[in-house]
Structures are given as structure tokens and as C-alpha cells.
Length: 160
Image (cartoon, rainbow, N blue to C red; front, top):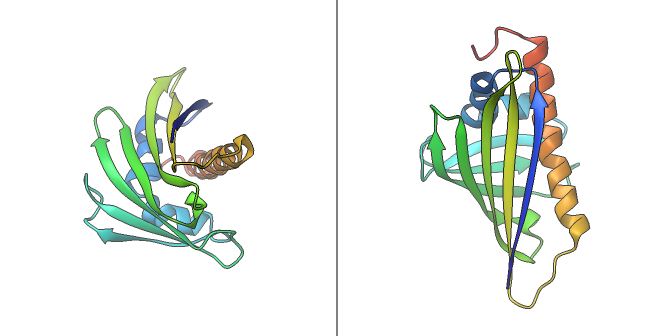
């Protein structure tokens, strides 16, 4: 039983407030529209986006996963920070108890931001997880951020 912690970051030319609004506060609307080939829908199962809310991401038939559920653990709209936990779904691969994500958007350069993500993978007793499984999850997360970043760059007045 152990916890594997991974940190990653990337710079974008989009302001922290716009990235936060799109990726955190409005992900249930924008992500299915932009990533329609992999995300079918995002629905609130409990709450409506505040701390304690649970949202379910439903994937398309083309995706290797059916769904995941995330619980919002912390949300700071002034500091552009969110912490949420993947609590259920086949992405846990019967190897993980949960995955906790902390995302922060900090001002960087001239009008851009640095997206900082920390993920904690809590492995079930007696199970080992391969680094390639974790890398695959990291790549999916960065890919989602890059799609939203491209949309925001192409639509400079969205989420102002």
C-alpha cells in the first residue's frame, strides 16, 4: 500500500482566470463539446460544482474507459486552485483506491499562466502499478488542457 506522487506543469499564453473558468468551473460544458470523440457527457451526480460535489465523466464507445467519478475537495476561485479526487470508475484499473489531483493556475509571462498539477495515486494493498500506466494518465490530462488552451487562444473573448 503506497502513494505515488507526480508533479507536472506547462506554460500557456492564456490568462489564469480564463484557464480556470474553462477547465475547472465550466469543464462539464466545454469538454464534451471540444473532446466529443472521447467524452460523451459530464454530469453532476451530487451538488453543482461547489466543494463536495461529485461529477461523472461519461466516455464515448471509442474510449478504453466507460466513466469516472470525481469529488471536488477544495476550490479557491481567487487563487485559481482546485483539488479533486477520482473516487470511482474503470480508470482506477482495479489497482488504485483513488487518485487525487491538485491543479493551480498562476500568472506567468505577459498575460499567460503556468498550469501546475500534482497527482497522488493511492495503490491498493498488494498491488503494484506500472509507471507506464501513470504516464498514460498524465498524457491524457495534458492533452485535455492543450485542447482547451487551443480553443481559448482561437476565441480570445471566451471566458473573460
